[in-house]
Image 1 (tube, rainbow, N blue to C red):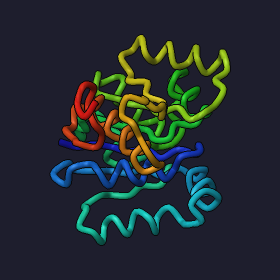
Image 2 (cartoon, rainbow, N blue to C red):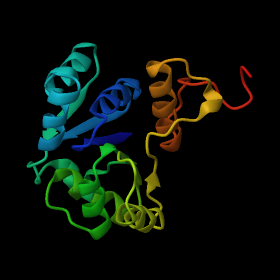
Image 3 (tube, rainbow, N blue to C red):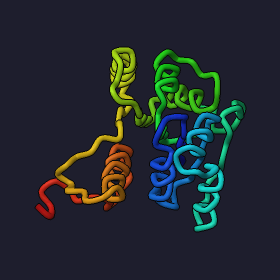
Image 4 (cartoon, helix red, strand yellow):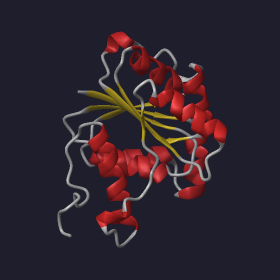
Length: 191
């Protein structure tokens, strides 16, 4: 299986990094980092995002890293055969571009390919509150079978700290992409 993770410039870059850690190593992984994501990472995790991803690579995770301006990359073509894509976090700018069919950098280009090829695409919009424009964009994409999965808590998981809350969210994203995981207690278990 081939999978793309796009990291756009919204709050929650650390969720993208943790999500990548939980993707099984047998999945061929391609990660795109937007320029805005690099800025957000500096502010939120006081780290260059590339350094955080390099530590995952040093732990034995094989992945290919791309900048958003590499529009001619192999993953930008439907013939490359990517199976799924997740954009975590999804900025409102990225959401609007995908909804309108704008493909002017690598993340939106790959999302456009996923849509035209009818492949799994998960977006994790990160905004609060949501504007009517954002909701309309999400509805439009949902009608195209895009998985709309904002990082929202489910309290039945009885999370006790930030790590267990993030594990729940990441586990739900993996579930939506049909990737098995045990990151959170399932409904009816441990009740």
